[in-house]
Structures are given as structure tokens and as C-alpha cells.
Image (cartoon, rainbow, N blue to C red; front, side, top):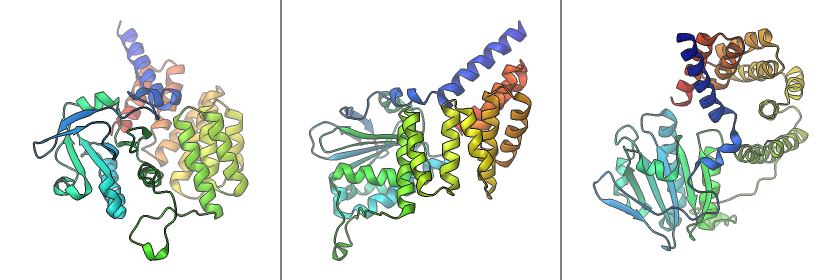
Length: 335
């Protein structure tokens, strides 16, 4: 009986991890709306005790951000949002910014509660009612709608592309699409940059968006374009290797790792992860275990390495070790 319970628990853990780490095709569908839909109308109390209500047809763009103040990434996201809003200058008056937090303490946003010129509203949603209405399960997450109340972007998680993605969609929502003259330095500039590095960065960003939509082959094509621009780009190669693994193309992923040379500790961890991930898919469990253990040692925050180790242990019916790996991975995902 105990063994059955352990196996059942292990299976549940695996299912949860698959939902978070494998089934990217479901990611866009977990929200209560999709890009192109109308932003849901809602109301919620602010930190000052008043009630903020969002209704359609107000003629303003809207940005809704979900933060958990005790989470480090949420704190960084809050600082980035403040910076972007400060750069908007007078354009900020056409943007309503709603920041939903589940705890009134932790993120230094209370000072902005009294900044009506920037239209910032900090809502307390400790019972996760607004979270549920929007279908949010991760923080930080931001949702942006244009002046016609149409959702143009939904993005979860904090990564290297958080700032450029947020700034780009805020500009789009406000209709800021052209580079301004140098004398008009007080306004936001959207500068077209055609350097090789900038083009590679755009391919990486597009690949991330496509991956989130579950379009893995299209994302792979974007990274391959980036590698054509710079065959020596370690970041592009690592991202491509990870995408190959997600697509089940383990041989192609191994081909990437065999020719790639990296120097930083985290890049070495990613390289080992890709190799172990691919080897696990190919059924070479012993080799995969060694690679993944080394990857987890170099990067203890790699949830994917722990998840892949869990799959190895589960395949061997080492249920206690599988449960431990899945639990550690889930702990990292939920901070």
C-alpha cells in the first residue's frame, strides 16, 4: 500500500512538472483570455482602502502586473516597471497601471500609490480573486491592453527579455512607434538598431515568444537565423539545444553540445543539462544521470535538471529519489 501511494504521489509530481516544464502548448491557454480578446473588466480594493474599477471604452491603455512582494523577481520587476514609467513622461497619462499584490509588504510601491499623474493603482488581492479572474499562476506576470481595451501581450516570468518586451508593448499600446528627434529627448525613443548583435537579440526574443505559444519548430527556425548571423554565439547555441530537447530532437541537441565551447559556470551547467536531457530521451540513463547531477551542482537553481533527474529515477522505479527530485524542482518553480 505504501509503495502504491509513493508511486501515485510520484506520478502526480511528474504531471505537475510536465505542465510547468514540458507542455508549453498549454501555456497560452491557461489564461482567461487570449491576445486579441477584450481585457476583462474588474474592480478591487487599493492599498489605501479605495476601490479601483476598470471599465471598457475609457480610451486609455492598461497595464496589469501581478507581483508577489516576497519574491525576489517580483521586486526586480517592480523596479523595472518604475523605470519604464518614469521614461514615458507625459505619455504616462494615457496609461493606467494596475499592480496587483498578494501582500502589502515587501515591494517598495506604496510611495507610488499617491502618484495620480502616473495613474498607478496598487491593488491588494490576498485572496487571489483577481488572480483567478485573469487565470494567473506565476509571478511576475504582466498583461497589456491598447486604448481599444484589446489585449496585445501576456507574459509570465522574469528573464533577460522582461524589460525590452514590456517597453515594446507599452509603446505599442500608446502608439509610440517612431524614433523621435534628438531635440525631443524628453520623450520615449523606439530606435531601430540594425547591428548584428541587435538582430540576434530580436531573433532570440521572437523565439521566446514562439516557444511560449508552443510553436517549437518556428522558434527553432528563429534561433537558426541568429546562428547564421553569428555561428559563435554561445547563447544562441544553448537556446537552440534546449529547444531541440523540448521538441524531442535529442540527436540534434547533442550535435550542438559537441561543438560548443563555453566558459561561464552557468553556461557550463546549461551545456551539461542539454547533454543529460538528450541522453535521458535516448534511454542512456546512467550517462544522463551523471551529466544532470553535474549540471545541478553547477547551477542548484536549475529546475529542469532536477526534473530530468526525477524522470530518470522514476524510470528506474526509484520512487523515493524521484519524489525528492520533483519536490525540489517544484520548490524552485514556486520559490
